[in-house]
Image (cartoon, rainbow, N blue to C red; front, side, top):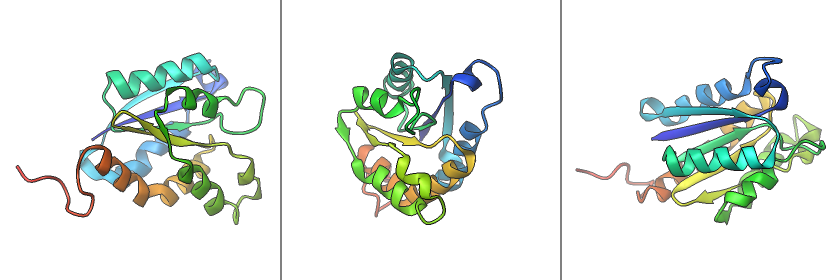
Length: 166
């Protein structure tokens, strides 16, 4: 099980501060997928072409089963992650963004400003998350059951039967 974690941040990519959200993705998803999780990470600025290129690289070249992005999902002028993501998706899965917004609204009324999306590219599930580490954890906890099921389906497995026998 290969997981890509893509941090989108002008300042972190320029070395102004350390990426804290990308490592949080790894911590939470190790709890979801266990020891079989292998991580590949990337860090790019808030630029559509760089984000789309990194998503294609992680999905198509690195062969990730799941790519989780963090950052760039708000309404700021440099927040372009959903637009970049849509350029590489083959099928959009709007329920992921809806679930994150709905599940977060009680604790963070500003969650309604999130434009996070998700979808598939080939056999890879791509999911956008907010940029704040606590929001990364919260959203991944909301999505965990759907992540497991979607990845299993995309890998050609029955999520209710476990891995195929050999």
